[in-house]
Image 1: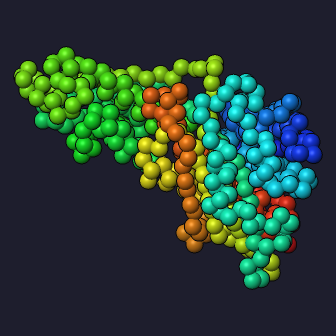
Image 2 (image 1 turned 180 degrees about the vertical axis):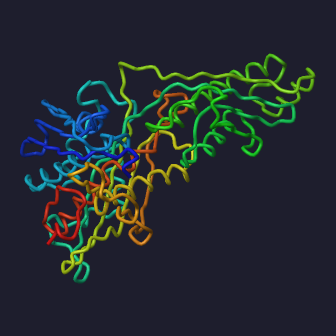
Image 3 (image 1 turned 90 degrees about the vertical axis):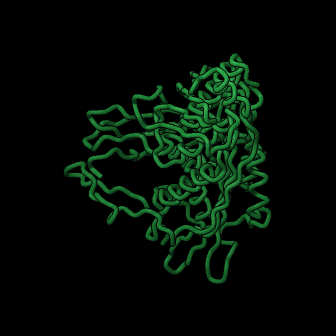
Length: 439
């Protein structure tokens, strides 16, 4: 572990002011993080959480970075947004109890159609539907408000909710689509599949854009000799490369139409090539995201968590989970759901198990391998239900898709922590929430 990047520890202070109806009047979010002497990494906890989720007349967020002799922190799933939503969403839960208000109602009261800082509308936002449909699926109306008020036999039961969010990122990509006289096609881009299912999704997008069966399409990626692709990070590959595919398909169809094919009838494409004695033809598309001063682009979601805790141990078990996500067009439901599941599992690990212990004498991690660093296993994970809501975001890109790779982890740890408080009446602010912190 000492030879790789890690998520830096954060110390966050949140201050919220609201009127008696729960409407926020002021938000202050201060973050202190660490970096090494050889790097300049900043875990920007207030950016991507406090600056986008809730509207208030006064919003302030600041970051203080301490340089210490530790290994260099780096990007980890939803950098900034993940720890930022944990602190903010736990603070919202505390505010709800201070106001004697349902935590979900507090979030509904403060849902805003516009960017809180910029004031411009969101391109599409269905967070309210995520809250309402998630509450219905989870059975939130049956929740008793007071901590320690719900039980299953001798087990304490807690229900928690938190908001998920992640910015819609897109970069630059170039795609070439080669259509062959035998009716097959090869799409090419120097993108990467890190195991997230990009190979499948991009092949599907290509087939759909051309209008031919997916089994007739091959997608080539992972080679720097191919047309330029985006970095495999920031939840941007599908949105960026998919949009370049769409543009390349338009170019391809126009060239085929010039040969006499019907651009709306893919069955005529191969015939047009054969009639001209051609073996293949190539379409080219370049997509580059352009900033929009009239709209802002963000994905949102709601995380609902149930925990059951044996008061004698006390051992926390996450027993049920419902997640509603608004990420624009869902290109592949199976791989998209898998992304959200993976993020939630990582969030559960962050909340209950994962911790890097450092040796103060050397600055190196004492938990150096997976024998010492605990992560969730199959036995730790109970049923997780994931739904997607909303419509394609064509204002963002021609695909209408926003990234799904990182939003799943945002709000997840907070939902667990809020459920633990509801079950026990003990507010643990220092992760992970281990047994000794609940005694």
